[in-house]
Image (tube, rainbow, N blue to C red; front, side):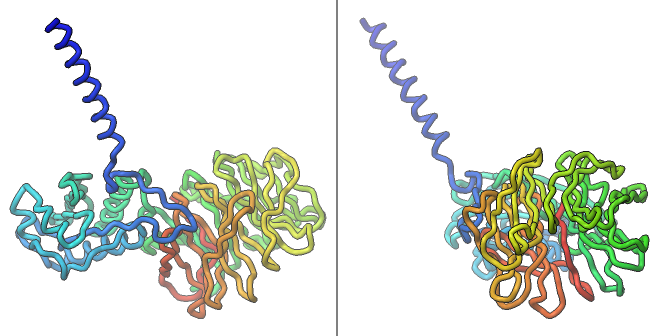
Length: 442
């Protein structure tokens, strides 16, 4: 009898233990929960994060110019990510030196001021190299969420900070940020319209074309090794070209066509969808990288331009005037009828399909172009810009959480960054002239 009672007690204990374990797994602290940021829900997730001055691990102090500059870069990245509110240093109770003296974090001094997260960062300067070590701490639980170090040349320390912020975002959201991505764009700052690319931050400006004429509509390949663009470089009107960014070789993909109005990549990076005018009619065609015609995708009188492909490569969005004015349509890339998804705005153009299955486009509303975001069915349209200026040529970030576009809100056309969470806007690539037709890539 006693043996049976003991077995029953052990059985009940085991069941209770399992229930508690399951509950513990299900009850996830909000810091560790993966963040879901949805378009159209501004301000849905914000963490209060404390970022004390960076600590010089050799000199055992803080406030030095190098560390201050690194911190400024990190704070800017964190704020641009749209999920952090970087708390003012004036409200911090604990000194930086005290944080580094002890292995234990005094979480009470940070929870008292309302911090959700604490980012502890130190650095070591050794000749022309810098090592940065950091820990991201959950203030509410006192646990370390992420702790890593990285090393780079001093000249690349900005990129190192970008990498750290991307790692932090990956730990919290399950996705890397955008701070190591690049943007290709058109600029006339040297007189002609040529194509350039830079880091997302605007650094490391690189010239892609230098033909002394007009080059437009850059689209970088999925592997980052090639670029599609339209150019007048050969004197026979606008044609579509593919340039190998490593070897420098160039192929005209639109040979045999009267002209080209742009193109976009298929996800496999081996085929492109091109807008070509042949015998006076403008349609969309599937080509390989030698310019061989694989398939004609549309066959309508009028214009068929601005192609953009869904992430899985099964559908295509484009602009057509088949109903009288330029509107955005979606069709299966294997064939089938095209469905109009825009019904407002006298002129809708430049669709861009995101990795999260959203389509952004420019719409002529109230006499100016604004950026609108919709779904592939056209069921819901969200106007995300305004203010009396033109906003054109949207391009999604690789992670689908942010947009870059060109706007003349300051007089000249510049590139602007906007997130879908708080919808903060910031100018990118500060240079002379106009910057147009951006394309965001890894």
